[in-house]
Image 1 (cartoon, helix red, strand yellow):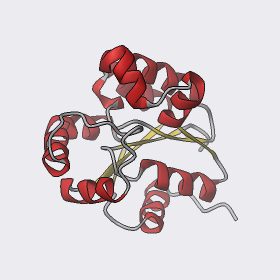
Image 2 (cartoon, one colour):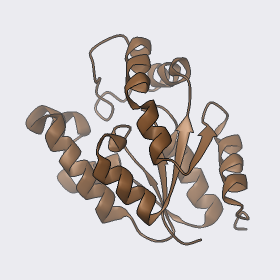
Image 3 (tube, one colour):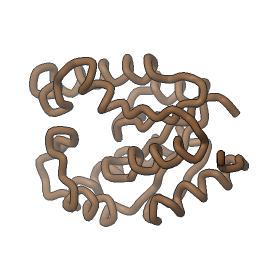
Image 4 (cartoon, helix red, strand yellow):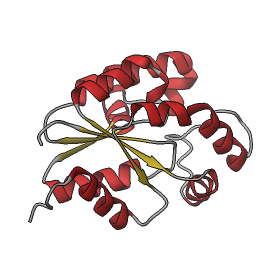
Amino acid sequence: MTQPIFMIGARGAGKTTVGSALATALSYKFVDTDSYLLHTSQLSVAEIVEREGWAGFRRRETDALESISAPQTVVATGGGVVLAERNRDFMRRTGTVIYLRSPAATLAHRLQESPQEDQRPTLTGKPITEEMLEVLNEREALYQAAAHIVVDGAQTPAHVVEAILDALALPVAR
């Protein structure tokens, strides 16, 4: 398999952590769409949203997704990448989409432990657990529809990577 692997899920799902470890295990390149946007625009996600609104950020996110997708690359997407049908179709058509599914309480705990407000601005302004419940209620069907593979993201990163490798039926690069 050489097609890109797309990691999807809510904020705090572990897309960057697991995606980086998966890329290492497969000897693939790793790219994070939010980091790519930061590097190319010299603006944080929060700054882009402040200047251009969420619609402007989502346009940039789509451009980034399409720009960085390449063979033998693991792509950690932003949590809202699935909101655009164009993105869901693109990922399913060009690669393998892996949904890191975690309960709202797990996501909230992770976000409280490592807030990164500049990279993960609040979507609703509500307390984080309430926000994560709302986000999952809104996006769960989209994550499921986009995914080729759904993995329990509440496990340790090593266990999640192992589950993904098993689901892909790929040996670990040594």
